[in-house]
Image (cartoon, rainbow, N blue to C red; front, side):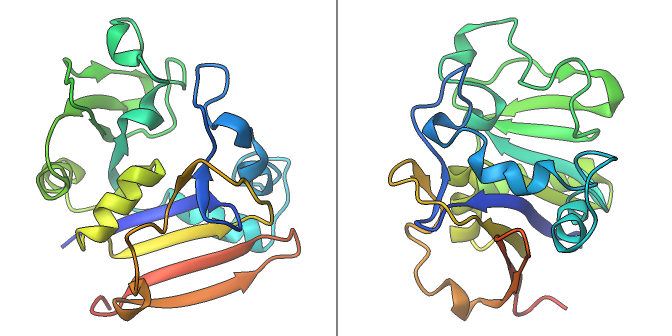
Length: 211
């Protein structure tokens, strides 16, 4: 069976994966781009970027993925459901290149984009969405793309096999946290931490019953 994976989700020292308030001009709220600066300088993000630890972790995001699941707040700012022309943040050729399932309480017709990305809009429980995504993935893995609320829901439901978080040395104070409700996560996952010269720490969680 394919695996369910999470990659490159950045969190602050106090556990927030996004700031607030989110808007069309500030997708990550008051956090701005600070959570993701470590990635922007890697070769994974920019062909002229750096190699090394951060790049090695970042590039794992892509391999073997056949479908993506994301939350409504990753697809667009508050109120995007009221804009019939909204097609995501990423322009005509989004970076996913797979079937991509957007969780929303207000589904709309699917949107086919350039490069192999098709957005499907579902109002369903995590297990049901994952089953649909696995069918679309054709034997490849399914990536849970975020945001933090969706990550937390899938981890809480016991549906995630591998998770990669990046702890960034900043304090946000408020926003949306990853850890709430995930007490004793280490009982179900083997946890490894790798420090990078950039100052971030890569945390990987691998389900203990997955080889």
